[in-house]
Image 1: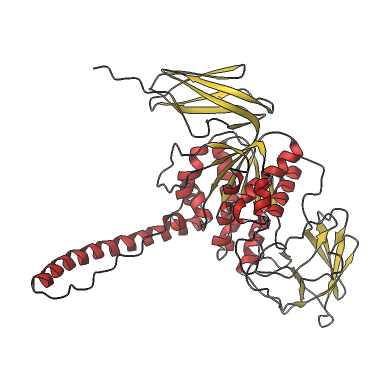
Image 2 (image 1 turned 30 degrees about the horizontal axis):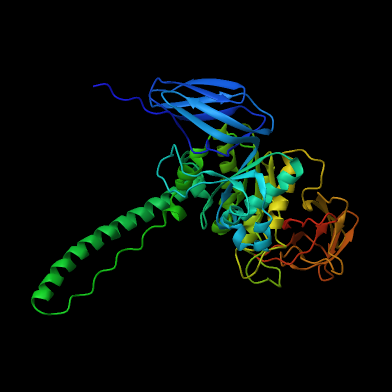
Length: 491
């Protein structure tokens, strides 16, 4: 008996209304019968591929400039036609709930949705999936940005894409692959987590939790079998049934299992052509900031290595201000996590949006996602697109002790340091050798800040905005906030 040839198929990103990345080779892939020849045609281009022994094939088209729409055909034993393809810039939008947060739930939602008529901005929402092993495919389809579709898409992703579209005038593709409540280790490959001794704690933690759950589950099933027998006996005797045993609390795999979301929601997208990624995550790792200092750069490097498209842009959001305002100099897990994020700027082609001025002390999901998207876009325009703009607020550079005062210098001061009209500069704490921090008197002096406290004769260190919900109002004149920092940071 002769088996029928397997139909040629395309993976999820290659559907109607897709955006392909401009300026680089365009990878197109799918499945077919082993050994089958596949022809891909896009515009005036043609590329050939042959399915390997596992039935996988990949063709690469030459780079194209922004434009469209185009039609793509894929021919093998059958023929597939993909229509309305645009060439532009594609960005992955990933992280936890603040990336998942929809336009419908945000600030001025009704107006924003009504005005979201940008057919050259396209959305692809990746289906949520937990997986033990890397998955070849996922589900989802491209939709045009319109008042019908924008409300249900990532607010940060949409406002970021809208800013880029307005500035660059090229089609923008946004792929949302996010899941609320998730830690960074779920978005990293197992190979990377196993490569660093300090990362293995996440694997060990999961394995212990799984072993404990399996034991509890086995015991529950034994108890349930005993309960069935006792219930039957009670019914025959006309007596009430004993209390049914409770099952163990199920494991939240997406919260605990290392690499499970990388496998299910990132790997299927590789190596679709992209310009970069935006990332809003960190709340779930706020208690492990020291580990995050290594985890986050390792994840970025791993994604870039697997995509094999060079150091694509990676923009991320520093944690917002949250919880009760701390009115005295204090410590905070969120402050340390912000520091870990700030340190990640040492990785090439990364950018950060500072949002400690637009959070909500009572809501971990602040509604102002417009400014988040705008600041991410500014970071991308400055670092990835090389626009000559002010794209950051002040970032601490160095300090100098001048008698009983400390002078602080900043990078990205723009056209000058500033506070909002009618406000006095605040949020700086100073300490002497005893490391007891007190609020500092401060004044802006050119592009520096001078800080002192009359009770401290020999100052040693300064902290700014150092709290879960910090006090701080230093900006540059372009209106971008300074990132929190401490000069006594550990190595």
